[in-house]
Image (cartoon, rainbow, N blue to C red; front, side, top):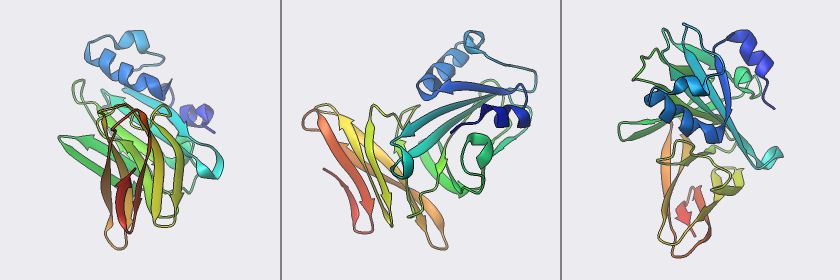
Length: 211
C-alpha cells in the first residue's frame, strides 16, 4: 500500500515514518524539545513526518495520512503517489487550527514553510467517489483511529461510519461534502452517548444523524 522507496527517492533524508498512533507523541515531544528521541532522519532542510492509518479494507475502506512539518525552510509538496495513493487520485486535505476546520479537494498536499514553534499539520485521504468523504473526529491529533471508527461506508451523495464511545461522551465526526461549482465544505455530526456503545454517524442529502 504505502511505498517508502518512492517517498524517500523524491524527498531524500527528509521523511520520518510512524504509525498514526505516534503522531501525538511526535508533536508533544517536539514541543518539549525532546524530538531527538523520536528522530529517524533529520537534516538542515527540515523535518517532515508522515503517519498512516487505515479504516476497513478494499473498496469499503479508506486510507489516511497525517502530515506534520517542522523547521521547513520552504514549502514541501507531496503528490498523491508519494503518499501511497493512486497517482491520479483527488485528495481531500483537512487543516485545523484557530478554531476553524477547513478542508479542500486538491491534487497534492503542501506543508508550508515554518519555524520551530509554527509546525504544519494536515490530514489527507482520497476523495470518495460519491462526493462525501470521512475526515474524522474533531479535536483529536489522530482523528481517524480504528479504535473509534468502524464500518465505513461512502456511497453516492452519502457516507456513514460506526463510532465507538462511552456513557456521557460527545464525539464530533466531520465529513467533507463536495458542492457543485463551490468546491466543498466541512459538515460536523455530533454523537451523544447515553451509554457505552457504537453509534452510526451519517451524512446525506436529507441531513445529518447519529443513532
